[in-house]
Length: 169
Figure 1 (tube, helix red, strand yellow):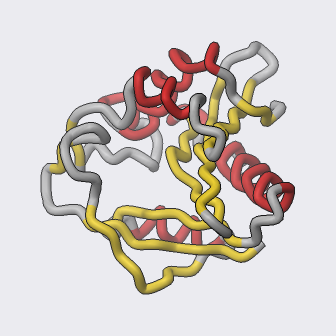
Figure 2 (cartoon, rainbow, N blue to C red):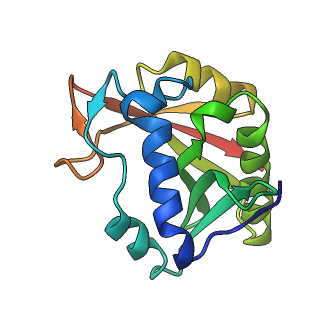
Figure 3 (spheres, helix red, strand yellow):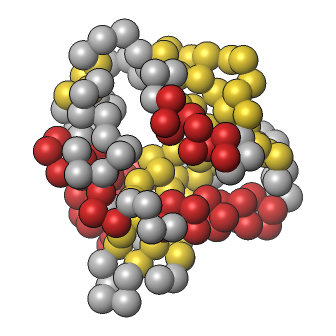
C-alpha cells in the first residue's frame, strides 16, 4: 500500500473517498464520521482541483494494490508549520493502520520541508478523535477557531468549535 502524492487525475476518486469518510450513511460504517454534526458535503471536486494549483498544498494518498485510493491527507505549508487536514480513510478500512501510515508520511514530508511542527484542527466535541491524535503525540495548544463560515465544508447541525493541536517532529 504505497503512499504517494495525489495528482489532478485523482480528484474524482479523492472526492468520493473524503465525503464517504465524513458524511452520509457510508461514513457511519467508520469511526471518523461527522454525519451527526454536519449535513452536506465535506469537499467538492472544484475545491479539490483548486488545491493542485497552490504550490503550498500537497495531498498524499494511500493506494491499494488494486489501484484504489483508500486514504488521503491534505498538507499545507504555513510559515514554519505544516497544516494537516482532510485526513480520510475509507470507512470500511479504518482501524487497520492506514491513518497511522498517512500521518507518518506527513511527518516525513514535513521534515523534507525543514518544517518541525504539524498542526491540525479538530472539532472540540470529537473526544475519540482528539484522543487518537494525542496518542500520536499531538497536544492541544489552548487555541480554538470557529468552524468555517458558509456551507462550503458542510452545514453545522449545532454550533461547532475547532481546537488547534500540534506535534513537534
